[in-house]
Length: 513
Figure (cartoon, one colour):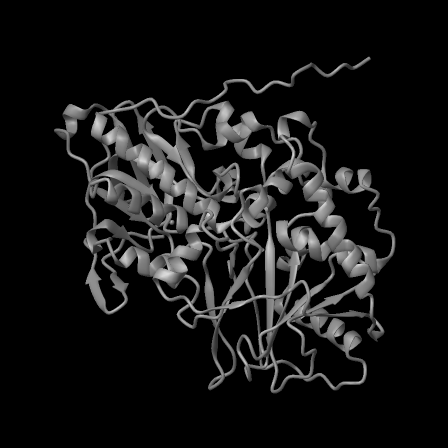
């Protein structure tokens, strides 16, 4: 559940006012030698990506007295994977979240506060308590079928899974896949009801299957977020229904300290170049921006593709780290109908013979969310998400309607008034929804993913967070930490940065015979 664009003379819109952004006209000789530019730079720090990590890094710089930075964002607004959509028939339109939607964990007593919860309160984001573990109805292809006992058992098995790995000292355990962990605690799903229930507990949170996911890392990410006794925030899940969009959380934060000259919207980065003298980026329209440092907050999926070129190429230790982690895809498919005909609970779980086929349903036409909206959505993940992205919308709509008609066999289900889903995996600005830690991804890989390359090139995002990968608060914590480190570099006139490992090795070699 659990996080750019063209440089034109285009309007920059921040709530309440509009600015014209100047066209940049820098030359191409940046990397030759500093004397050829007489020391000129467009800015001290170029922050690539205007999502949670990018804006938070800018905030950290600002609070340290460093205001010479610029955020470069591909889209026409800040927010990154905090992406909302105006959805519905004319006269019945609502803002729905196609990206991140929940504040996951808040605060327990005087314990650590989730920084996303702090931002939500600061900017008056309208949220509702999400009770998706208890408020649920179960179905199969014959209609309403009660397999609540199976669902409750699955929840207990998931709790055992994360407790048996995540609350011990990780270095004392050999990592395995979460599927292996499930097997070791005696959880082996056999029926479609077992599989749907396990999917709800696991895939719906991590965006990937237990076979693809580290037992240890998934456990500590879950516990550090939700379990107060393990250092987490709380078990609360707050669902955003704010009609500004959940993105208002970061947009309002940015508006409080970023000036128009510190922001480039609709500016897609095509090349990132660095040398001992500094950094420059080339945009898709050929424009060039120069800086002393560049902070890349692109998603792991973007880094894994060839959408952005690095000059010189990233070192092998960095590329190995990037390609050793995986990117999950989490797709919400929205439908609006003339009137509600479905369950009165918040959630529904559909058990199909194919694991992961349109399993998790949520009603927005619910007293706690958007009553009277006529909106329901279903979530798919992983390979099934990639599959539907290859289909035409009408094909996906037909499949979804066939499942609804199986769930409600005695109900006439009309064609929806509106239908929409975001193609996260194929979008070159995202290439997926959020990162996932596989069992083969070692701690040294994680350190290398996070580490800067030489002095000039830095990285931050939810994928670089050891404790909170895949979560918004992971993006926040990484943006804040790297922003502070960059501020130290600037004040000190240079720095070495984070350590990396040139060659990641197993403790013992593999034996072939």
